[in-house]
Image (cartoon, rainbow, N blue to C red):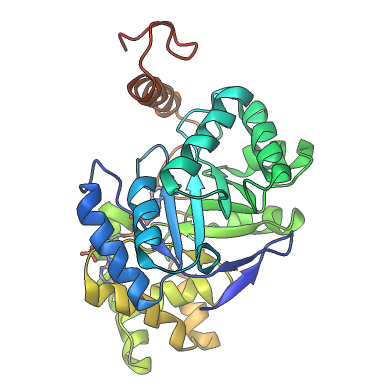
Length: 305
Ligand SMILES: NC(=O)c1ccc[n+]([C@@H]2O[C@H](COP(=O)([O-])OP(=O)(O)OC[C@H]3O[C@@H](n4cnc5c(N)ncnc54)[C@H](OP(=O)(O)O)[C@@H]3O)[C@@H](O)[C@H]2O)c1
C-alpha cells in the first residue's frame, strides 16, 4: 500500500475505504463488506461520528485477527462543534465505537460551532496519545487559514470533496503553506455525480490505453499527486478495481487533460450558506440527545428536539 508522510512524520495510506453509515446500511451488512475489504488489503477506513460509521469498522478490524498497528483508522467528529468538553467526550466515544485506544487521524467534520474549543480538545488528545494525527474536513480557505494560523498543532489533513470535476486547486497553496495534506471525499463523484465520473468518456479513453477503467483513472489522478482518497463501494469488483488503481502511472498528457476537466473547483456545497450551517447545528442537537438522553441535553435546552 502506497503511503504519504504527514507533517508529524506519521505514514498515511494513500488509498482507503469510505464506509457506509447506519442510515445507509445496517452495521451487520457493513461489517461483511469491510471484512472483504480487509481481505483484499485495504487498511485505511474513513469513519464519522456524525454518520454512525465507526461501529462496523471497530467490529471488522477486531474480527480480522490482524493487529491494531496494521490499520489506519480515520474518525470525524460530529457535525457541529460542541466545545472543548463536548469534543473530549466525542473523542472518547469514537474510541469506544472503534474499539481501540487510539485513532490514527482525527478530523473536525465542519468549521462550525466552537471550532477553537474543539481544536484544543483535539490537541490535548493528540498530546495524550489518543490520536496520532489531527486534521479538518470541509474547511474552506478562509476557515482553514483562521484555524491553522492560531492553532498550536497545525491541521495535518483537510478532507474535502475532491475529484476530477472539483479539483480544489484553490486550496493547494494554503495547504502547502501549513504542511497539510489533502484527502478526497467523493473521489468518484459521490452519490449524485458518480455516473459523470465513472462513465466519463475522457477518463474511459485514457483508461483504455492503460488497461484501466474510468474510475481507476479518476483515483490514480488523485493518488499520483499525493492526494489521499477514500472511495466507498459495496461491490467486490469495484473494491478490487479501486485498490488496483495504484498499479499504473498516468503520463503528463493524461494529467494535463484531466486538469482541464475542473468545473467547480471548491465542490458543490456552499459552506457559507446559513441554512446549511443551521442544518448542521440541528443535526448535532438530535444526535447528542439521542445518544445522551437527559433533561438538560448538552446545552441545547432539553430533550424535545
Ligand atoms: N467529510 C465529509 O463531509 C464527507 C462527505 C461525504 C463522504 N465522505 C467520505 O468519503 C467517502 C466516499 O465518498 P462518497 O461516498 O460521497 O463518494 P464516492 O466514493 O465518490 O462514490 C461512491 C459511489 O461510487 C460507486 N463506486 C465505487 N467504486 C466504483 C468503481 N470502481 N466503479 C464504479 N462505481 C464505483 C459506489 O457504488 P457501488 O457501491 O455500486 O460500487 C458508490 O455509489 C464516504 O464513504 C465517506 O467516508 C466524507
